[in-house]
Length: 75
Image (cartoon, rainbow, N blue to C red; front, side, top):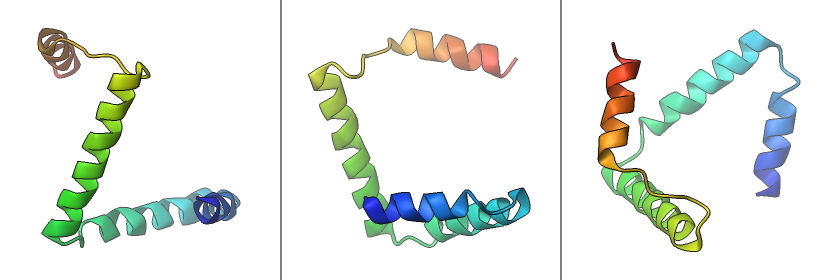
């Protein structure tokens, strides 16, 4: 985790164009994930979200509320 913080700190001193180029390259690298890697990452994310819900750090939102919000955003 410390390594990621150091990389982020270094990236933040770049000018806006270089940060945008770096962000684009990082996002593109995610498209190169194998199906197994992508599934593993989604499983980890699902587990993290479930743990947050179980410990009370996140709350459930009724699907109707989610659908209403999406409808408003895309009108």
